[in-house]
Length: 434
Image (cartoon, rainbow, N blue to C red; front, side, top):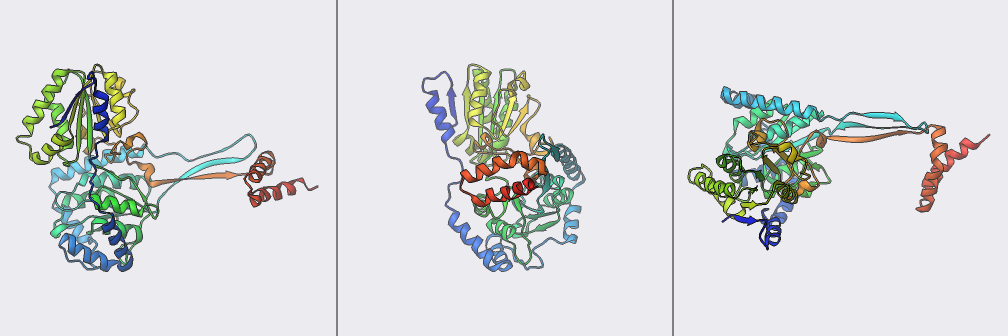
């Protein structure tokens, strides 16, 4: 049964701490398996990808069929119905426009000593996007990962998308085309991450890897980090809804189930200052669980990780939300923007009852790749900056070096780094020559 708490209870703090500490991430010990797969790909290249794809995806590949051809891409794109194509294009347009506003500006200025200082941003040269495969894959995730990369100016974007038993989701292929993806490979799992990180005869290595995946993919991303950059190690999805009494409990229930249906380990939490709303939402959730298509998954999520918390006021609700640091936060209250000012930790905030989280998953514009497992306390969702590098710029004039060089020399000596100090002193001595 879901956890039902009341902030007025004497043992509330203990129970809330237990809720925060509950482990939802996949506990399978996959690291040793992933380590072996990465080693195999590094050693055997394409041969490893072909063998592992046959083993896990039941699909026979050759180096020539590993990558989708232009003819195959055109065929799959043509299979997408017009109304689905139009929806993807609308989503892509909004995502692209939102992320274009995130592009930072270069800067260059001269300070009081005459030194020129600044920074500039340049994109990574190549990025790899992992897309879960089969008919359960998500074209929206392709848009959310690929479009920011292209907006940032990434020259080469490669996708790895497994096709178990040869099944292809045409929407994923179309999403890749709309997003400007350059290469699509039908490989998946930890072996795909290894190929993107280290390269094979067919797949050239990239500089950064993003995209969701199962426990094996997450473990592989963790292992290759440092060789390449990664976006994050994502855990199960989560939503926290703060709702006052002036809401339709059916809407709130559906919003919470929209995350519960993702994964049996997903988490949905309601925080409300209305005991009546708390009860009504639970009734509505139980009713929808009788008919929901993914009711077994959603039901397990709600049973094992769901929570309903009653609080005396919305200020307490905001305080508790900040401690949870949810991936998705809905503020279904009369003055959502005012309450949002009290929120310091959340991956994404959805303001008002007319903004269901599902809008953010598809067509809102902001990215839906967000920090989970309380990591919103220190990290942000995927954005253009994830595909950019900031390089600092500095240029000393003789006058600037004369002004600040002695301090650098002093600090170098204090750290016992003689050559550091001498490199500055040599120039200062030159300036002091008659």
